[in-house]
Image 1 (tube, each protein chain N blue to C red):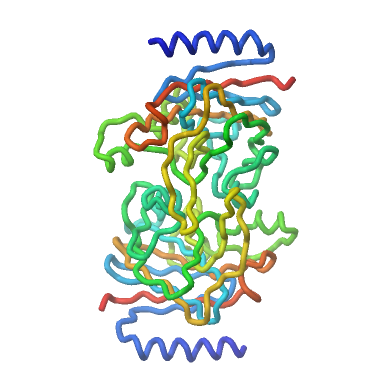
Image 2 (cartoon, rainbow over the protein chains, first blue to last red):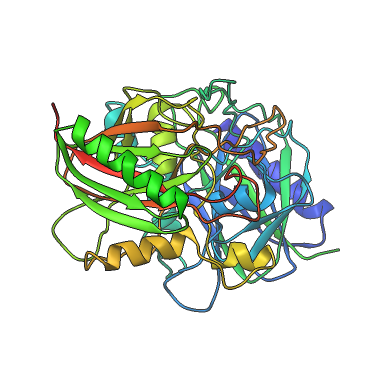
Length: 221
Length: 221
């Protein structure tokens, strides 16, 4: 695949230019990857081709196999009095524990925290089954680290463009991220993050077609 | 209390004029009440004095003591492509099961589905502890029916006015409901509903001071 060869070069360039990169994962289109992040480390999500939504989940890593505390979209909205935190603001758990802080965003800054992760039921209602989904990607990605959750929480939908009209109507627009746009967080606590390169190809949120994403865990400079 | 005497008269008038009222509960300011609703019955929430937020929760009543399926704010937003359903639209569970349909709204129509229920942590961060909260009201109200939940879901905040600015900023404005405004739902399935007359008195969402609400379960005419 031409794109996969291209992404190989992008990875090589990123790794050579960023000595502080601790770990780097390619997340193939429609799939998910989990990574452990220590308190103080950075997490960067890059959209190498542009136009791709990334569902990001963050769980407090308490050392157990069952993850019980996670980033809460609803409590983050209440805590920040915003639909989505501004750069410098925190995402929190239901207990208001700060878990991730948004520290840099090179994209047009359109992200979503209103819409739940796609799941088999979503695709069944759209008339397609089976179909990969972000919910199943979370279970798969966590299982690869011998971890699990009972309920997949509402994600932080990076690059997802869901404008709100004055009457409360929501639109599902293509992700406006450009090639190489990236969002960076610092982790306040030891965390397990999961990134799903959203497989949605029936509603036009992923410009063109679903594509790959990159996730890096970086030591602070 | 003058207001309690007044609400007694309102209840008497409502009961005498509505022969189809099956059950009616006064929910005292800052407290919560749970009620069982059969499929096809109506649930009406009335703000007798105006300006009061009501946190409404709905759980599928499967006959067990632990309620596992509930109205999901996030899945309802995705399902309706709206911040809040319009009259005639459904609230759904995470499995997309329709649970309540909004059938009538005599209020100005400002309701919220962005903000989580207030809880002890919310009041601690506001500098007050102990303080009644909607989360504790849910546990208390369900316990009175010998029911319980592990996690209190995000509520439907009736009459709560949280406008969204173009930049995603949220404002916390006083509830615009007038004396006697009411919202009515029909239940698609056997349901346990909980209504909490929100005790918030530190942020100005309850105009004046927290006041009582009414919840009625009605047989369909």
